[in-house]
Structures are given as structure tokens and as C-alpha cells.
Image (cartoon, rainbow, N blue to C red; front, side, top):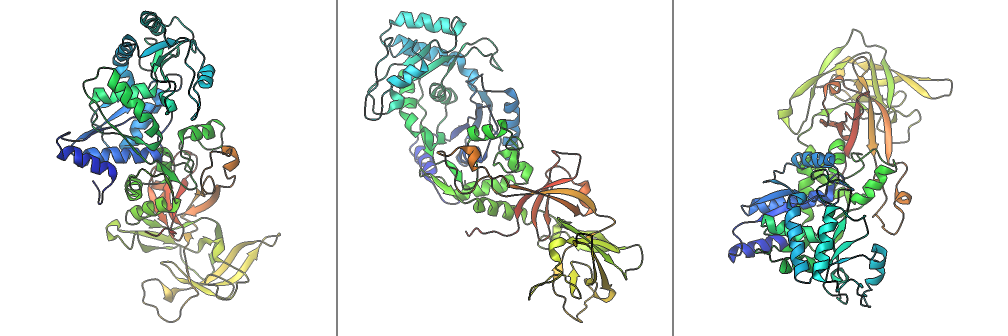
Length: 543
């Protein structure tokens, strides 16, 4: 695996050295009711890293036990996300593959007097469950005869009853200190057709019942899940102990991934999507895999970040700057550096003669393997509006009237005249250039105020460029309404001018825009060349 160790890795090593297991078999079990986010990336990375290091494999298993909320479209997209992350599963499995097995095991519980069919409502069930300090109240149906429960359960499967009218519950202990163990529901009636099994089933197992039996069938050696399921582990074990299985998998929990400034939970993302507060599941401000891909994050950068956060049993919150650091580090040597002017200000070089020329540019000074390109230069160019100031403060290092700057990779220019519109806003600069100062000529006669980037006026092309800030400030607060936490100004749109070669780029192609940051091509809106900011150039994170 990676350098260092963690408690899960230590458990696996001990199991293998003791002879309990020969290798590690894990599984990744998403529910196809939405898309994967960075929390799933953590589970993916942990499961696949463990099985890879210890000569095993990982199943991809879709937890499709709730047909009312699940969709085959999400199955397809989730598989694409996992492949994009660089993980290869051993076999594709579905919880629905095991419906017959689960049904059989539920009958075993009924036969043992450990499960019963109940007709109380979900609301009544909640009221009768008790509290942490008070025991629950037993249902009037708790001692229903075994044969009666078997008959009702069979008829539930055949679709004789309405949704919500009956459930199958485990008979455990209504005074158990762990409320989860107080006669939990095993099966409920759902009359919605299943996307794989159609109308075959009218009852579906709860996750807590399905999970251990799926692990049993697949002979999972280490069932790894997030810390929220720690209280459910006694129920996981109880179902295995009482359904006559021949193999007992073990569940282990690790801390969830919380990131400052991010909305991660699938339920919260779904609400943002449904209410139109974001641009779908792939909104670049989301840490869904599709959103991160659209923004230009890289699989290696994401995985390196997750491995650096470690595996523990203590929940904590990670600074967004840490994630951005690992994305930036991964992109640094992989991306060509190009010119893009986000807020263009026209510059006319009045003493430039001829149609123009091609200037050599290095694509990445830190990685010569990315080669060079030729960039057009002519009489008209664009610079960033912020790189000019009519009345500059002391120490200003960019262009101002009568002052000289170097155009990156080109010439010195001096601002001779400022053109304004009727509102007094600067719309054009008229400058002169010094032909002796061409970049690479060795000119050492004088030093300019500074160096600024630019694009050619004739050959550059328009582009939309989006920059982002976090969706929320600080850590998500589950006690405050989600909508009240969303920032209204987390997207900025620029009508930019960029080098012509960017018009030949493809979806998700990554570039470093000189002096701005890393950006990725976005073909979601093909009507206009569009780029999304991935990360800025500067990092506030310290390793």
C-alpha cells in the first residue's frame, strides 16, 4: 500500500500472519440513487488499496434494495466514475443478485421465533422504541405465531398488501441499550418495480439485513465502512449469528472525510440539485467525482490527498487547501502553460510594422518534455485590465502612463496614451515597443517596471472562464438550513481572450493559465469555448 500504517492495515496484517485469512477481499457498495462524492473516494481508495496490497481483490456491489429511489442511469455513471478514478473491480455484483438468499435467511429467523410480521405504523414504531434511558414497548404482534408470520411474509412477497401496512421485524430486545437492536425492521413492502427484477418482488430488505448477508455470500474478509455504521455492527453480527451462515465476515469502521467549505453528503447534494441551487451533480463547486472531473481535478491528486489524510477512527475536518495542494502538485508537471487574459484591455502598439510574427514559447519550464509552441504577436494585443493603472501607487510594478513593462516572452512596451469612453472608463492603451528588447536577445540596457502576460489581438479567441470559491464558509452545520449556508457569489464569470491553440482542446484538458492558476476545458456548454478554474497557483497549505 502506501508508506506508514493504520489500524485497518494492522488488522489485515495480523489476520494474515495468524492464518485467519490468506489475502484481503473487500467490496465497495454504493447505492445507485445519486453520484459518488469525495467521501466515496475515500472508501474506494481504502478498499482497493487494502485488497491490492494483500493480494486480494475488491467487488463492486450496487446496494439496490430501494427501487423507489434507485435508477440504472446512476449505475452506469458510478461505474464510469470508478474507472476514471483508476480502480478495477474483480466482479460486478448487485444486492438484487441475492434477494432469494436473503428471503431464505429471513424465513430462518421466522422459523427460530426470531422474526415476526408486524402491522404497526412507522410512526408508532418510533414512539414505542424508547430512549437512551427508557426501554421500548413491545408490539402487540411480537408473539404472533410462527406459522402466521410465515404466511403473512410469503403473501407480502407476492404483493397482496399495501406499502406501509406490514413489516418483518427481528425479535431481539426492546430494552437493549443500543436502540438499533430494539426489534429493527428487516423487510418492508415496496410496490415500485425494481430496475433489474421488475415486479418479481414486493418486499425489500433493509440495508442492515442485506449488508452482512451480501458480505457472507461474497466471502468478504474485511467489510470496511464509515464510522456512522459503528452502532450498527452488533446488528450486523446478530444477523450472521442467527441465520445459519457458514462464514462470518467482520465489519470495521473508519472516520468519514469532512472538508471545510464543502457540501459532501448525498442527501444534501440531492436537495441542491432538486431545488436548482447548483448546476447538477457535476457542478464544479461540488466534490462529486463528476464535479471534480469537470473542474479539472485529477484521479492521482485526489487519491494522494486521501492517502495523506490517513485512516483513523476519529472524525475530523480537513482544510480545503490540503485537497487543492495535492491537485496542484499533480498538475504542476503535467500541464502546458498558456496565456489567457481574463479581463481584456486592448493595447495598440503604434510603432509596430508588418503583419506580425511568431514568438517561441516554452510549454512548461519545469518539464521540457512538454515541448514548445509558437505564439503570434502583432500590432494589437490584450492585457489584463488589472495590469494597468492610470495613477499608480508608489512601488507599482505594472503598466502605467509613461512607464515600461516587459510583455512575457516578447518585448518592452511603454504606455504613451490612454483612450477613454464617454463615461471616463479606459477602453484602449496606445503604446510603443522597443524592437531591441525581444525576449531571448540578451538585451541588458535597462530594466522594465515588471513583466505582464498578454494575448495577440488578431489570433486570440474569446472564451468563458469560470472561477469559484467554496459553496459555504467554514464547516457545514447540520443544525442550520442548508439553503441558508450556501454562498450566493461562489461563481465568477469572465469573458476572456485566450491563445488560439486552446480552441483545439478537448473536454477536461488541463492548462496552467500564466499568473492565474490551473484550468480545465468544459464542454458541458458547447456553444462557447469554456474553461473552469481548477485551483489557483498559490497554496496556503503547509505539509
